[in-house]
Image 1 (cartoon, one colour):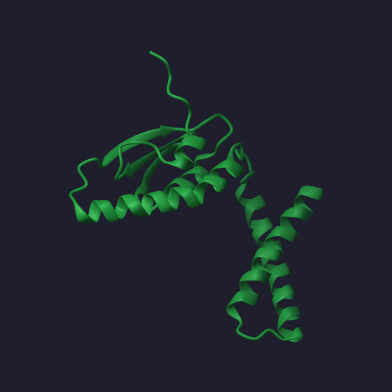
Image 2 (tube, rainbow, N blue to C red):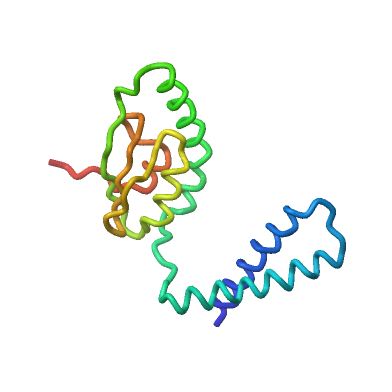
Length: 151
């Protein structure tokens, strides 16, 4: 019960925040309307998730990946600029096996947030296929990928 309440509060906060951001000058009436609309949206989002049978899982390593995200974006931008200046000969398509407990949904989104990496497939919940402009792994990949197996 507490988890459901927390989910509604989080959805409500996100939706209220988005509404307030899109309003230039916020009056008390607009805050009330935003709160009521966000509560309705939060309840609808929770009911849709329950109806679809989606369970939130696989968040292991998400905080470390989020911390590595700004560095990955800056590095990816530098690689993208360098690739525009020269032919991206180091570009490769590769599979990334994820650490146990990391879900491909959130990990794929964070990996794809870097300008030099594009997630092109998610064949299973513990693997993503990426097209990267660089041969090595980026900061987010290092936090969510499994360690290479010894031969």
